[in-house]
Image: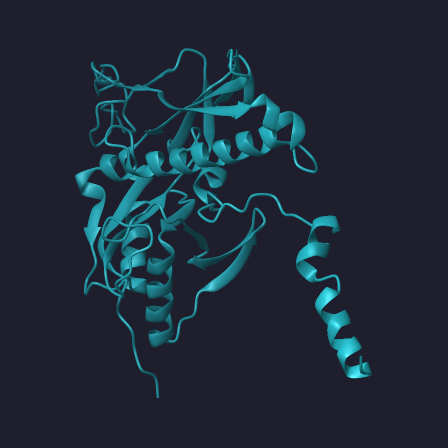
Length: 319
């Protein structure tokens, strides 16, 4: 056998990558959840814990002033008006809604495959993130308590030309002028607003808050969320589309918008979230019930305003 033949034969019988793979240590990642978002709304919104799951918003009957008063230098000759402050007789009550899911894990899988990552904890973690994503969506879009559905008619304005301009954002501020906390917009709406600012030569200032970097307008941060849909979609394929931009004042002390959750839950995992072990069935499957209780309340009409019919598909060529 020639030397050339010996080398060729050795190459055919050599250990290959496919065989060696079985003995190799592999560096693995945790499950990567592609749809996960920062959920900034739930971080910037002030939350209040409830004891009974019901939150009643008592309001004064609105008028120029709740009482007639006397302004006079001659009090002896004038009659001081009397009366009382009138309350609404049927105030709105917000009832917490429940978002729930069940996670099942085979105990044999948990026993054998929980290194380096605990299978149960990974499943629970992903399920919790899914519930939190759903919570943010419900806070904005729920038919009962969602912020978009509960903006007063007097607090709704339209864009002037479709695209969100600095003038439109200023108009929003005029609607929520008592200590506005933040704008809330889809990322594509924010990009459209940036283009309008660039066109006018007024680039927004950037600020770092709560571990994130945000644009600001008139000192008010513009917070992104994909739960303010564009043409009903989180990720629309079309370059154009319409959405909404919210301006919110948050805080109970400011008569703003607040999130609601059930406090003191049994098996409480985090704010408003309960994780309960339901047991193991006769097939060795362990079951966990996850329940999230949430709602939102608008304490005053001027705590929130919306810019409607925001077009996200306007682009420009610059010289």
